[in-house]
Each structure stands twice: as C-alpha cells, then as structure tokens.
Length: 123
Image (cartoon, rainbow, N blue to C red):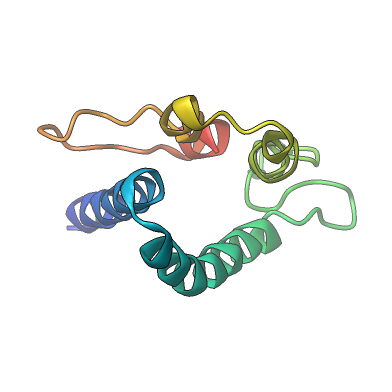
C-alpha cells in the first residue's frame, strides 16, 4: 500500500511541475503574474523545508542523507542541486533547455519513479 501511495504522490508532483513549466512557457503576462504570486511562495517554502531537513548536524553530516553505516558530509547532493538550480543556474538561464535542466521525466504513459538519488541529482 505504501508503494502505491508513494507512486500517487510522485505522479502528482511530476504533473504539478509539468503544469507549471507549461504555464511558464506558454501563458500570457497576466496569467504568469497570477501564477507567480500564488506559486513562488509555495515553491520557496518547499525548498526551505527540504533544505532544512538536509542542514548539517554538529559533525558536519547531512542527517537526511546519512545512514547508521555511512555518513554523508555536507554539502549533500540536495544542497548542491539547490545551489546549481537556484543560484548558479539563475545566472545564465536557458529557456530552450529549461525542461531538461529540471529533470528528464519518464514518459507519461508509464509510471514515474523518483529515487532519492534521482531527486537529489536532478534538482
């Protein structure tokens, strides 16, 4: 049951990202302004929550990416992806390749699976 719920959640997130990308690429200016006002605060809060979970502990390890047997030093791949997409990627955006910069999604006809490694490396 958890696997089904996980797949439903992942699909919903991918569909939302697809919809936002489509709006960013095709919507008129008033629609873009409306979407930006409603979605940017939600997206920034989502990033903040995800990054807070990956804040280094007092030993400099990422608690979310570390396991009992293998410690992941900070900055973990989530922080590296955040920097790449929010800071470095913002310096020279490429609107023709924006979809590929986010992630290479699976075709819509199949189910999408997003392992933590894929999420971290793709974002």
